[in-house]
Image 1: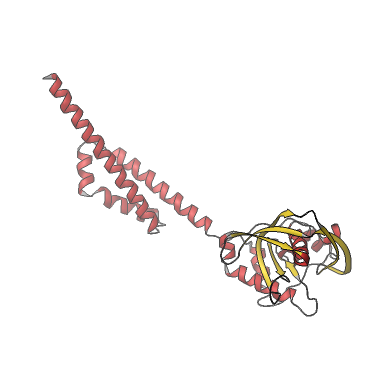
Image 2: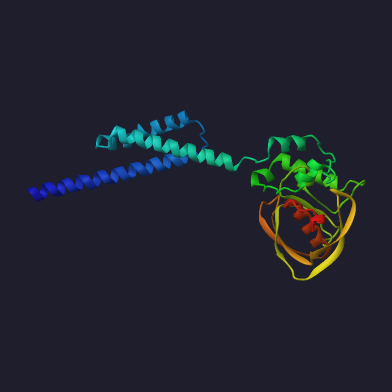
Length: 267
């Protein structure tokens, strides 16, 4: 008799554990459902969970010993996790442009932007700072597109035409450059976000350089003949690498120096 009672007790325990396991799986599925339908209101999320917990199968489990306290605890845990997921998702989809940067870019809609000059003390100090990286949300934003357009208009200004420009030169300390690709058909200007040089060749070349931010000066500078550039493509958002040689490699080195707070006269 004792053995039979033990077997029945073990059987009931196993059934309870299975039902409890099913219950938690349903709770997790509910959490995923709430997350993907985009609920951002904790009360709405709680209502959804209440409807779920009042369903027939959950009531049966509760009647078998799944206490109200445990259910409430689970509800709080799920709601907390849900809000955590939503906050994280919103943060990853937000731009990092500051109010000052946004106001500066919007100040010159589809216009040439003033180029910072080393002859101005405040400009010179700004040009010597490290630029910040851009995230994917930044590169997909309207303010980023405006910045690209205005940088291109500025570097192509007939009064002071250049072959490259960096965002810090127009007062935006972000890792974005435009380079004229003399190694491609029609010599197009192309933009590169979060650009870094990850390899310099041992072969060097010496050539004269000037800069939109250093008026009325040209100096002979030694640069690597060939480099490898790593960057994020502003349209595809893919991280890419490009091997560049000759004069175009010099332009890349000059512009990426700007992102690192270095002017060619510092070399």
